[in-house]
Each structure stands twice: as structure tokens, then as C-alpha cells.
Image (cartoon, rainbow, N blue to C red):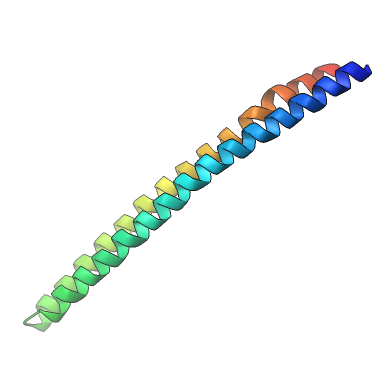
Length: 110
């Protein structure tokens, strides 16, 4: 491997690092936005359930309100966890993508 090859490989590695940082920034922001949005929706649903629960006229109605809230809360959580899992998987793929070429080149040079 010549000095010129080493310089090119170093430059390619630096460019890949900056590309990965850009992808990280974009994906991290999307994940943070999604978490904040879910937290807001969850708090609003909780407040609405409390309001319904306080307005329940009977024990049966209170149990129904609580059951409905727990069911919808669980379903929302599972959907959110799935969505976040997909966002994290996309994040990992996107962050790795800039390094694919550099890794292939460094393997070929050896």
C-alpha cells in the first residue's frame, strides 16, 4: 500500500465519518420528535381517562373506563415501540452506509 493509497483511505474514512454524523443527527432528531409526540399523546389520553373516571356514575362504569384506557394504552405502547424499533433500525443502517465503501476499499487494498 502506497502513501497515496493511505491518504485516500484516510480521506474516505473522514468523509464517511462526517456522513454518518449527518445521518445520526437527522435520525436522532426524528427519534426524539417521535418520543416527545408519543409522550404528549399518552399524557392527553391519561388526562381524558381520569376525566371520564371522575365522571363515572357507577362502579361498573368506572371499571369499564379503566379497562378501556388500559387496553388502548397498551395497544398504543406496542405500536409506538414497534415504530421506534423501526426508526432505530433505519438509524443504524443509515449511519453504517457511509462506511460501506471505505470498508470495501480497505479490504481490497490488503
